[in-house]
Length: 254
Image (cartoon, rainbow, N blue to C red; front, side, top):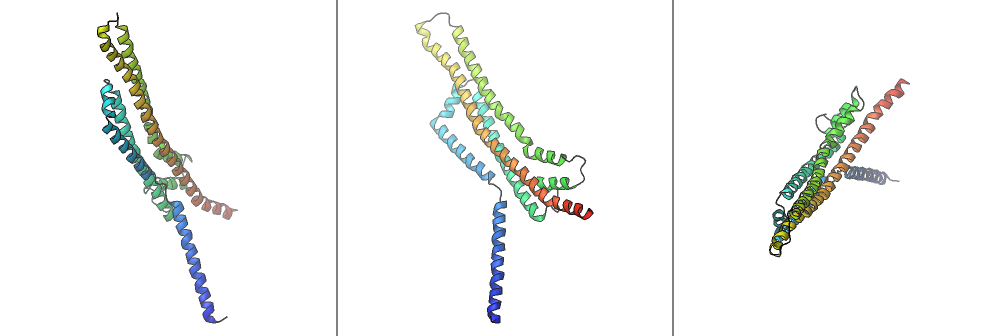
């Protein structure tokens, strides 16, 4: 084999190895990319805005607010809107923390600053001489899942307000029936209007509370699953990076 041909073969091997390494780094980068939780919420928010615009044009919101003199329907709507905006802010924060975790992983779990992200703080506390071995994980779980418990409580409040509206509506209906001493055909229209008001409050508040509970529960479930994946990846990366030196020390001691 001539020297020129050998050099060409060697150059081909080097280029092929570099391409394989680049492909491996690209594949690893793709695997490390976080799930687009923020964009998922934006898509859901766009769908909710379109549905709200459509219902507003059709006059559904005006009908709901006019049919409920107690104002419970308006309270449920405001709670749902505020909770949905909070879910958007929370989804953006969780996605930022996961991106920061992958950036800290590239630097090294033992070298990343503890104040850069939740994962780096967990790794620093996990590697240090902690008095309680479960304390770093408890702190991490409190940061990733702690605020969600309050959001789930608000989600339950929506359903309870709907049930409260049902009780108030049927109470109005029962009071109107109890005040009727005799059936007068001339007052039948007014009686039916009073009965319809109580029945409308009972049914509409329950319907709005159920819809808000279902949609907000869907968002909170997605946040919980994303937070679970964040904690699991943080533990896996920390164990893989920090268990190696410990095994090396034990082997050297033996």
